[in-house]
Image (cartoon, rainbow, N blue to C red; front, side, top):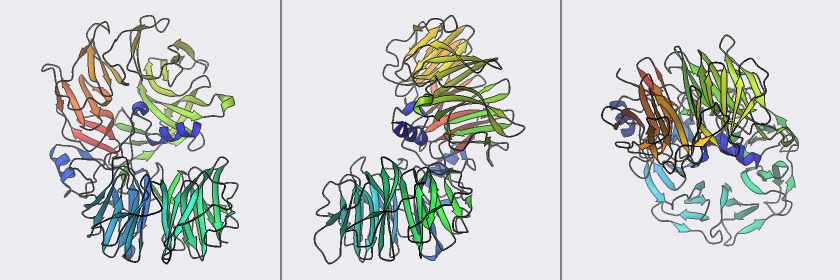
Length: 633
């Protein structure tokens, strides 16, 4: 259970897990020819230079040294300089106009045609990725898990409908006999033999045979996640109850021998070979290298700050690329002895939190925390006083010119399981220093600071209070069993929003609570509680915005002009109220007109966070980094 919660938090920790996050693309300035990018620019929004990184799902090395990377939500990126820089190549890479990108899960080339597989569609490009056209559309929520070319045939593996093939370059397709509605997790080839991993079994079909062969002898694996071959040997990676698993076969899969290192504590997500060297990428323990065909292993993680490795690409005996869950692309030029980030030009990050102090913009991503002092032209990381990946950042709050970060740590059950902590940013040393840890908390979701008093909303333990510079233990303010998603304090009144759309009010600083909204937001998740003057505004996923002019005694919906009521975030900048939505970008509330006015056009992006600095409004997006737009005073 802990791993499931951790994975959900890591992938999209914002929006309180009320919907699967379909990440929408952000286009870099280099591709002004893209229709969507040009439209965004005409409407004022400009993508900043990062933060770079994000989730990488697949690599492909094309002829002539061109590299491609498929991302979780920003489409395909191309590098022509060995990974020193990346450029998005996405024109046409969405089946319906105006749709954002789902994960690009497979890339392969046949002749002069490059193929890309996504969650439900197969695309092709005949100009090196500059433009794409639709080839094959699967049903909704289908996902392509692999594309393989063997001689003149193209094979496509899917997560629900088995394997499809085409003998005419994609003009027509047939479902392959024998695979049926199997969940194909891995599709690869050894020479002219097609190999597929489905569940805990390996299937292979030789070119001269009509029947599929399945082998399981020696397997102790729950799910197959990776496959490769080297010098007549087959390797399969995955996971079991005890952690990462890796098996080798020397008889074309008829029998298998376990060769996993005890240090491989996580799923073996990626396997890659060059010559006699084998690399294994794990989803939490980083990269391992074997120079003796898997008999012995060495961890090679120096400089690899994100060790949740999802894909590997070996270019030559020295150069290896690792794609990660959040840190983007890492590259080693010495066979793995030292790694460095190789993310220039790749703004594939999901920025769930933004905050501003002075002229500095701070951006929070679940496992990373960065800042910019030049309006987003460059971003620098803040150091962390605890070991890497121990905490996931969930919320930012500014008080008296200082920044505080709410975070979640996954502790052993004996220590409370999912616990919370609050960190203070030590600007002088560019470091986060922990100021609150409390094993009674089940995870911090929101943080409201008034003077020296901290109010903390949690996943299920209600609300806690802590006074700065006091003993680190907190005071329980009630609402146990509620998932607190938003907090606002006004004098002695505290307002709390929940994941079920409830708004509670306490008129005595938490001694007692009263439900103050009835069915206005029922079944939705409260995403914001903000005051503008004497008016309190509340936003929710799927219900838009309501407001109260009497402190919560009564509420009025105000959704005129709001084209998307799936409101993810709400922000007050000066006296202006803004909301960020799931599909339709950013809106400003025009109080005199009682109308929401769109702020430019940023329709291909989830707006996860908002902040204001000087004359600009900044938007943290899902898989598009940070955008900014000039707003009128």
